[in-house]
Length: 169
Image (cartoon, rainbow, N blue to C red; front, top):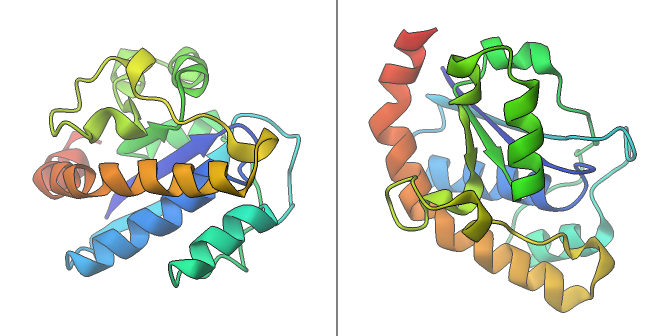
């Protein structure tokens, strides 16, 4: 099983949206039995809370259920079991790489939108998704669009790397 974690700040907006959208994209690509996707946050601020109602509404409009989501904090012990850690913005990227126990673990951290160009090499400063929590419903729609744009290349990258990822542990 190839394991992926999406990470934002509180785990109530961007990362649960990204995880659920990625799960559906993987299912549509026939990879649902090969890839496990979770989400978490870099803070404890929202622990146990459900997804933000505005994020839930955007997902429901896209026929994606998120009712069961409860926020959780990223646990550095997970580095061992994860193959790919997807940061939603550069702050998360930097924090996760600092939490990594070694270089190999740090190399598992990528920006979610770093895959838009298909290479995974987009500069982290250019690959972030701003936090919609402080904004309007339109900001949540933008977040959804930005996540969706990355999915085809991200799914392709996962397809290409899933066997190697399992082997490197």
